[in-house]
Image 1 (cartoon, helix red, strand yellow):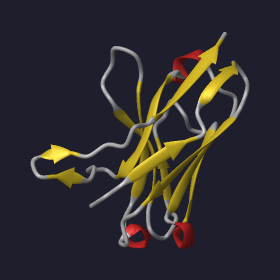
Image 2 (tube, rainbow, N blue to C red):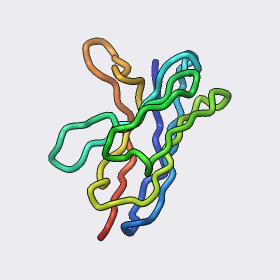
Image 3 (cartoon, helix red, strand yellow):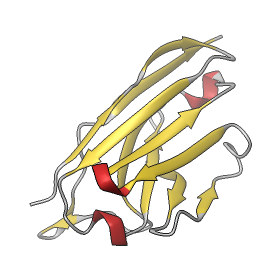
Image 4 (cartoon, rainbow, N blue to C red):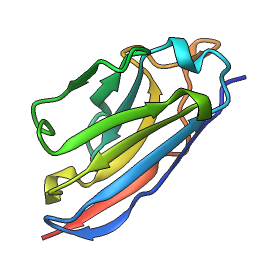
Length: 120
């Protein structure tokens, strides 16, 4: 049974930084691509950054140059360092397998997420 636990969100002023962490219980963590997704209020959830098992990374245009994704396979943990935050980065942030999330039965599995709020 997969388990995803996100942490590190909070309230920050524009221009500030936050570091998100996500720990998973899956034993296959070190061979899969992981990603950070976000869901702004009233909008759909989307992938913003991903990292392969070999640590190759990919970013959405909106966060390139500001966000950095990394992973520690020994700890089954993926991180998202977010710098120069903007109000439009306000969202609930989730980690999951990328680009296709983990599934449980017929449904995508998501953790509880962590809220990031950026004030102007």
